[in-house]
Length: 118
Image (cartoon, rainbow, N blue to C red; front, top):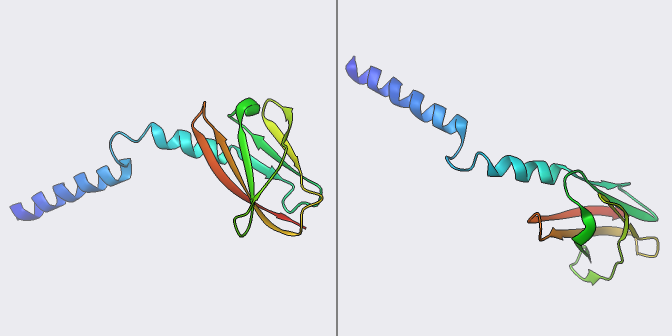
């Protein structure tokens, strides 16, 4: 009977540790998730322009690179609409999927997003 109580006690400790997540990462992961969720590409699919809206990041020093679906880099000139939004003209691109790689050194943000050009 004593063994059963010890087993139940140990299971409850392990279960609470799993529910809390790894020690030392509680403050880091929610920030990363919030920053990733705070990026919106619209309209998607698009025909003329793709807009990128950031909730938490100032786009002043954002690095933007674009690749087609097979990985070839495409030259783009993002236009800054305001402190939190960029716009890229894609009207002359071929129809298909494209990848936007976004990087900001100040906030350590990095993300890659896919959109469809019709």
